[in-house]
Image 1: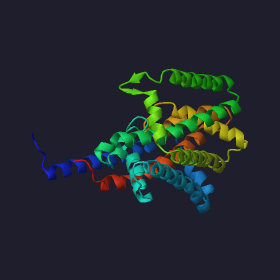
Image 2: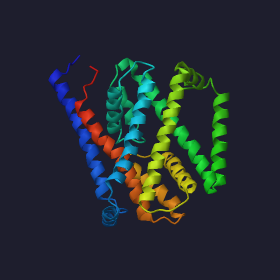
Image 3: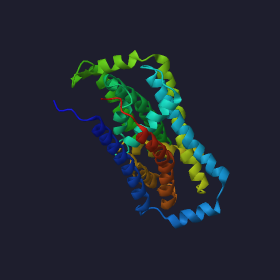
Length: 307
């Protein structure tokens, strides 16, 4: 059996980390520099007109709280395997976010988090990350369906509810059917192995996180002088997040997907297209680009546990 020298392994790991970080920043720059929907002249003029340190810090605080709640969620779920500190959870969440920026729907994030643990725990870590992201998706579906009702898209909302009921009944009647060795019944057993208080805390933190980033979106519209009723605005935001999250995309294209859906729905409310595009880009910048910038540091400092 051929063995790879330790120095060679170190060089390969360093090269991979460097490629991840360089690639992340390249794609971020490319999307910001070559997006034809963005009118930087209008944006700079508006910022100069409304420049406010307090306002900027206020909007930034939502991004900090949003990511902090995600860090608490991960710390809470991992406690099922072993307790970790806030610092360690921060390292894992932001590092994995950076590693997953190139993959569809952030799938690389699963592998990124697993690398921080022993190889024998990989399946459990991936499963916990599925639970972590799953609750967020469920909340997005619930709030999005409510948003569709409020906006008057009754047929869409009823179709979603009907489809959800069908999936629930199909799952209930096919618990023993196995897919690649796994069954619904086994999945439910695995979920039930996690203590209820961990699930409850996960649900609370997930709900708070949803409310934080949706209201950040709301206050950005207010900053751009978009005057719509609160419930209409929040229902549209919920609908946009739900439908955009249902489409396969990459993290670095997240704002483009959400922006396209947002332009459609907010356009029906008479909101200027360039304002919607800019707000979607700002949301992406505040909640993906900034965390990835910090996560890049953790990627470069990462020391693999696998030999």
